[in-house]
Length: 253
Length: 308
Image (cartoon, rainbow over all chains, first blue to last red; front, side, top):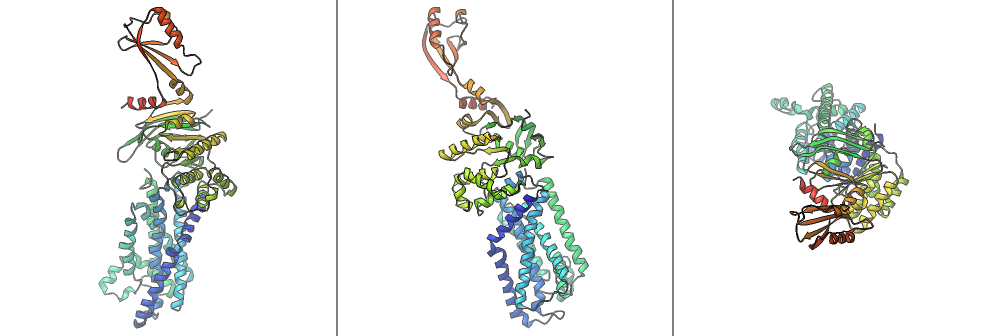
């Protein structure tokens, strides 16, 4: 194991976040605050409580998930796409580094940033609504698992992308809609029966539901299924990454 | 002595079907400066990229100090520093950060004193906190060299190190290469500039269309180059070279109407005067004469054309 290399890449990626503090941390915090002001305070005050929880508080897990998914993907995809774009990937390929080490360091750094971001949003939310976390360990587990899983997904997108447009397209066209429709802003049992069934095909529903359960003990689907789904995604993306490196897909001629 | 790099029967075909390398066999000796010459698209960069692990070989084997580059890539790659042809650098990093990053990436413990030494040797020390994007092209080239040297490699690849570089940096670079060689580093450089190969290299290899068509000691090549030819246009064709001229390296050309004398211009005596006297004595008259000298460039061009 080339630990020096793992540390070097990890530090490099974390330093990049430090340089781009504005995009990495401050902008998600601002946009989350806006959600709370608009949906929590302005509109939320007219929405009845869901399962005995104020609408503002109900939003917290969904909003954290929304940021977690989009930021994990954005961070990890950019982290590996940029060296490809500038050509500095030559150095990664010529270094005595295994593929596993590359993934661990890039995905590790992206996931770390997401976890920190999630916690910052949680703290920000605390300024607007009274927070309660019923199952803190489960909450952390879902936070970390989701960050790692979607950083892996971002890593895959970063390798697949051959232009900046492609880097954006999956988060914009797939992840954001799925998250919005996945119960970030509502409990799926308020949907008409047909859409409730349709929603069960949306993988993000399981992520949000499990995460919300760790806060309030209420869930759209059982927490066990949520966990299995999360780990299932983790396994799927890990398998794709393994295949990418085995074949050298889009990295190595 | 065991060669430091042994390339056996190496071929590379890209997915497009283009065959960039065809059965390359090459040995690089420990501690030498090897210049790889070849026209654009000949396969120089593919060859280097394959040795360094950036491109997968399609066939054949490469050993770096006995380590197979595929099965034992960690040991092989740890020994190698690569300065790529393109100026591919991070934009927003500082010089210090990017060079330190490279050292870590190659599995070496931090050593600020060594990085300082490298940066000073490359006149980068006063730029160490500058962002790379603010540096000039020449400075970026130096940064790439510093990155390649950051992990104390014993083999250094320089892919066209002096393309688009000013005279001063070129001189600096040559000096640096020599001082690295003095420390025992093996250096492989590719270049279009024949004078550079002439100046620097111990051995020269010529690659064309993915094939190595010549590998020779530079001194040996220079000896071939050092040869000049004196062509005498005779008044009357000769049947054969008279026996009294047997001591000279002579050939008949152009329908036996020209006598060509090949001699070593670097030798102490060319023997021209003696030859002319001998010709006179033998009664051979000539109308005109001319001398020609082939340069490394001529040899290179003819080699490269020959096989089209």
